[in-house]
Image (cartoon, rainbow, N blue to C red; front, side, top):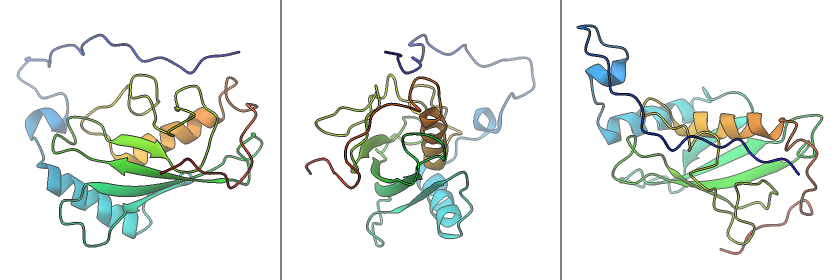
Length: 166
């Protein structure tokens, strides 16, 4: 039985101080709500791609905390022709801390708790390698890509349509 890729728990290297900035995030720390509003706008316009969608769970959530995500199962895998529903929760520390991810639709993956549907942030692609320049759709795209890995593509899956208890 294969294992999901593990992310290193080592601290990232310190930013370069060569006089030039390595990334936009090092130059400007974008406020949480600006980043989330940008993600909302991209999601509403359908700008997300690669078989995933992201949107607010409650359309008038002014805190921009609770989100819904969808992953469409990749063809040629055990996930083919399945639609996976997820909940994402952004703390007040977002984007410097990744969102919490919880599957609503049952899925068999090494980093998803089979009782609760919660993705382990230390093992889940997109969470364990999170950068503050990432977004929720990037997390979902990385999970979707991981569904096609040799480790996961043939995993037996729960009956289609089954969900975790709320």
